[in-house]
Amino acid sequence: MIQADVRLFKFPKFEDLIIHEDENLIVINKPPFVSSLDQREGDEINILRLAKRYHEDAQVCHRLDKDTSGVLLIAKNPETYRAVSIEFERRRVRKVYHAIIEGTHTFDDLLVDLPILNQGNKNVSIDRANGKRAETFFKSIQYFKHYTLVECRPVTGRMHQIRIHLATQRASIVGDAMYKGKPVYLSQIKKRGFTLSKSQEEQPIMKRFALHSKSVAFAIDGKEYAFEADYPKDFATLLKQLEKFDL
Image 1 (cartoon, rainbow, N blue to C red):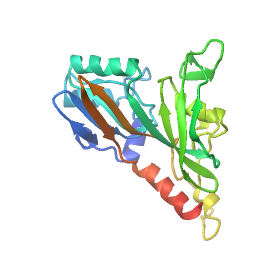
Image 2 (tube, rainbow, N blue to C red):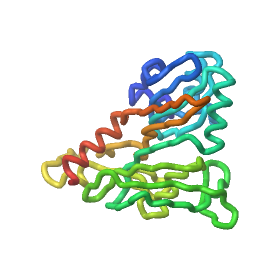
Image 3 (cartoon, rainbow, N blue to C red):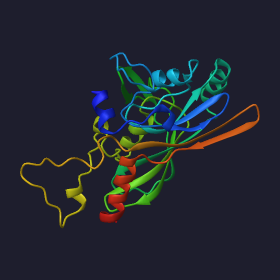
């Protein structure tokens, strides 16, 4: 399954993913459809394995969902891995994600602080009694007729945190079927001039949920680090079509 996705989306060489490298750290713009770490299903391709082929001591410092693209930090030695891990544990890493959500929503640094319970097997739920603290800030940055581009700033790092917190606001991420998000089809937003032959089946503009890790910033030993990742082609294409047909 993952191999088909990689071929379909022309997965580049690991070297082509790198947006920063120094003696301690590799920063990549992770493509979608590739797991950050080894999965129990035995996927042959994942970022950790690719990174270790590039640098044998590489360790992925955090993880992004398989379908999520964007900034991912990889340590080149145990000391850097520990230092970055401590920053994440102490919640001193400033993370910014961009998401395209259903509906027009005016979020002005809205704080969603609903506890999340990890039920295992990648299933999570909002549970005020037994869940762990989870906080995310949301800010609307671009409006369309039927969708909104939002900035998401998670304070904590729970599984599916951004996705489930948005769903509680009736603002599911486009294409996120797990949280009732629907894909966007060109025929939905382009009412005129859209034709499709009977033999063709229309494909969604974006074949995953629309979530991108836009930037990561932190400090180690007094030195500031800040990295930003451009949108991948599918995310940029969806935005372009919304700007053209859904304003």
